[in-house]
Amino acid sequence: MQPETGAPRRRHVLLAEDDYWLAKELAEGLAASGVDVVGPVASVGAAIARIEQEALDGAILDATLFDGDIGPVAALLDRHGVPFVLLISKGDGEIPARFRNRPRRDKPASAADLLTMLFGGG
Image 1 (spheres, rainbow, N blue to C red):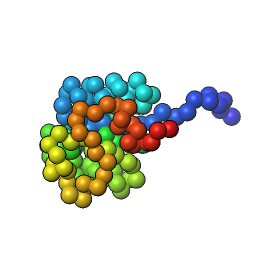
Image 2 (image 1 turned 135 degrees about the vertical axis):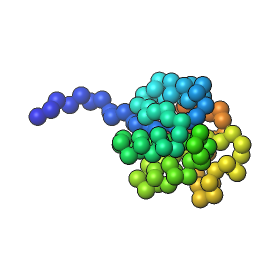
Image 3 (image 1 turned 180 degrees about the vertical axis):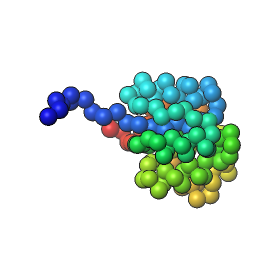
Image 4 (image 1 turned 120 degrees about the vertical axis):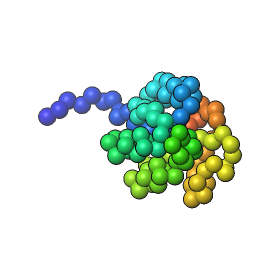
């Protein structure tokens, strides 16, 4: 029988952002909020690989990464039932049409705001 630690499981959140400084700032803010940051990753391919390797509770996605738009990543997260928030810098036009109804925030955004969007206030 394993002893109970009483500590809640930390949430695992994928961070897909190709701006190094913004990714660094968000990763630090997420970690300070008690989140296990998966990434950050800067490409669609790397994001897909992490989704396939990790059990995720949520994701924060730049709408456009180095190697293309976030559509394939968002679609895979949808299939896995993982909520996500999109980060945009050029308006809704950069979001693939089928995901324009999803939560989004203009860059820059605070880690606290993004976590509230993902998981609510609690």
